[in-house]
Image 1 (spheres, helix red, strand yellow):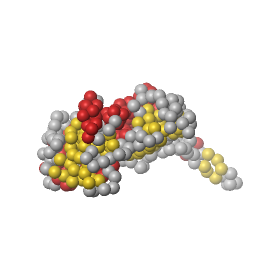
Image 2: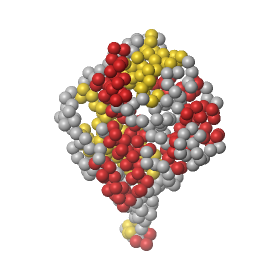
Image 3: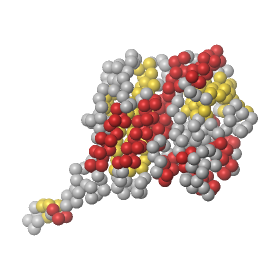
Image 4: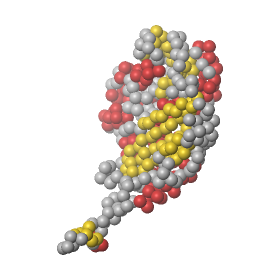
Length: 381
């Protein structure tokens, strides 16, 4: 039903573990219970600071408000957030949902204290997936868990999430903060994101993919948010620390590896609306090798020219440290291509121009061919 609002968990009260407090009950000689005020234990003494949670809510309200868009029906406060699909301009919508995290890239953010952009990664990993279905991201919810809530650090993280949402046209309308003493080491935290989008019925992607379609690759902004267990292992092998100079770019190694995942939402949607886009593939864990086949129908594969784009220096450095062969690199990392579009050849010029006008660096990296899986020509350089 297009008039029905979507009910979601709210950010209003970024809910702490549900309990009002603790008290020690002592039994009297007659069996009646009584409370010994000298032994009463508060929730704060158990490690949960409700006041800090409330302070965080107040701190992040302006950031959440910045993400408001048509369809949002209420601000922070209450037990649920409302979204009106009709007010967002939809007539016969199909909803699309996605969820993801940031993986062990979080470890670098925690160790360096640079948490300002990790929220952008969280949003990107969800909304970039939504557009591959042809959907416009509408709203986003996050889950932030930690052992001890540090308001300043948590606010910086959520403000990063809000920045990612604003850049994607997606409202930050809900979330959860869980302070869980004993579950995380000091300073550690975890994140999960949840995004919902929509498109009109019949606009779902992929559709119409055919032999001869041209594959356009959009440049990545580095490693993005996949493969960081391997990245961290290779950094350990290199003997470098996060504060050492980056061997493949400007600034420190930690800062270079924390470059946020690129948000492809607005350029991708503009290309889809221009016509001729048959499929999009977000190149995440599994690289080109595993992600391209997800959008190709049975009987079709992809032929990729590895010399059609330059390999970003970070991947050359990682490969050199670990002795990674080409196949391993291509199925672990994005190798410099963060999103791929399968485009009707007759619309190639228009789609490419739209993408470039939206600020993307575009490479013609191959074509759809008869067969299965991904075949490669040349070598990464």
